[in-house]
Image 1 (cartoon, rainbow, N blue to C red):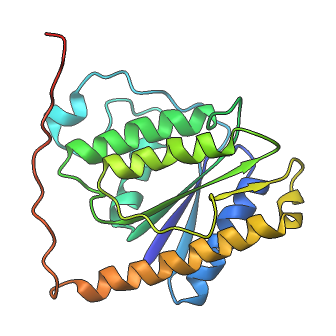
Image 2 (cartoon, helix red, strand yellow):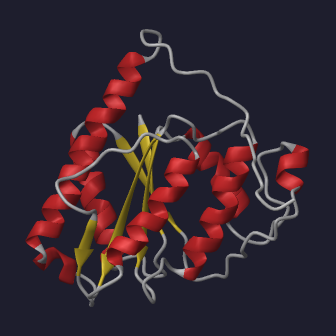
Length: 211
């Protein structure tokens, strides 16, 4: 099994990466492979709602100038995904927002590529806004019918300069417990294949209240 760790921070070795790697270390200890996907510093476009991905059903976004299309197969192949972002003005990073809007929409309208995979979210925060970011990230997982493990507190950790989150002992425990619980859930899902029949997928029903 394999889990994709998605770092929405422009810093490849910052506090968000440390939080993700702490989760990943527990997954590795349970025999599960991990890979870090770094969103990076290059611009990532937001969704323009053109509907091309829904029309073509080719697992691709119409915008092909950034890392989104090369990343979609990585998410589709993974058994689990961990989303991580720093907190910018009580929100996730701008590149992470553009990335997730497009990747998760393509996944949803192309047969539910992420459906019943295991997904979790973490945030690294200096002072406030972290719970809001975790909630934002979790909504992408929920919309795509992903299975979500928990920890023993909200999945965020505190620190400003790179490495400071390691001083947040409770936050580091939260990340470790998330990794352990995610590994357990991944194994439950794997061992349930062919034994427990998953519920059938239903086409999305859209109800607009203003017509």
